[in-house]
Image (cartoon, rainbow, N blue to C red; front, side, top):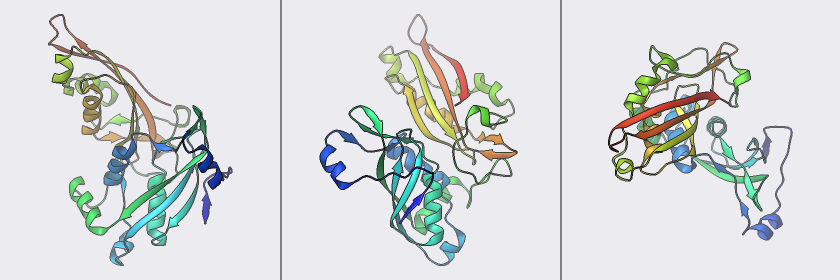
Length: 267
């Protein structure tokens, strides 16, 4: 049974896939499986009653994605329990999606996702987090889904340090010019989009402008080393999409490091 997530319903016939298989690209997650794994490890909340009842298994869901990358409709392929199914859908709503592509144009499409619920795996996630459940740096936390844009929020997400956004000189000092980039004389801009979740974690990382030598990976490392205060909308913490540009620049001798921050924002 399909569950609509918006007014638009999408139906893809088997003939469509058979005819266009070589030219059709399925919808995908921003950041691929790496970001999906990170999201599960940091955002999954195994329902307590499901743990007590020993409920476990893999929920599989067909996700229908619009040409605009909107998560519109779902169809359960394998259901485990009402509570675990609900948590699976909640996690999927955290994902930033790339739409399907046909003939170099975005189109409607579907992709199948698997969400594994096993207590031993969840306890490992909790040990890695350092606590049984994710604390929230801001209360109350909104239960609404969707990622907020600039004109919908009352604040911007900030690193959880006293200086907030004014701490970017401090943040830039945490960056280390990758040795490989120095060896290859790589310099230029790295531009990254990311989502700050209600929990304060950074997810859905997408590299919009890249460099060689490990430069994007270094920016990601620093972003994820910080805890964040999420965006506030209507007095509640909500997820928001942000962007950062960092300029990697060598000095005359090609060995010193300099980083210039340019333009944080929500869109």
